[in-house]
Image (cartoon, rainbow, N blue to C red):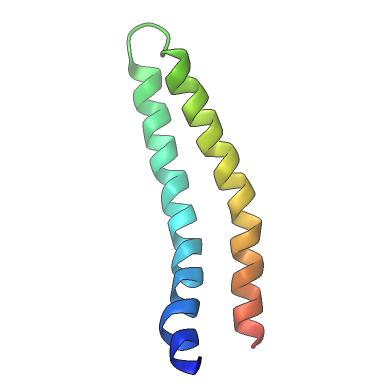
Length: 73
């Protein structure tokens, strides 16, 4: 259990918070590319990007809470 906790459980949580930040940056880059396209983007693209944004927003507090709990231990 200790080995699992040290090697697996802690790293994904800490790395996950960094990944959320990376995802936000990538999402913004994609939005810039979409805005530069000629004509309006297909509805599927807009819908997918909005869903991605919502998922990132929902995941962020959970990851921060998990990270805080890990540091408290």
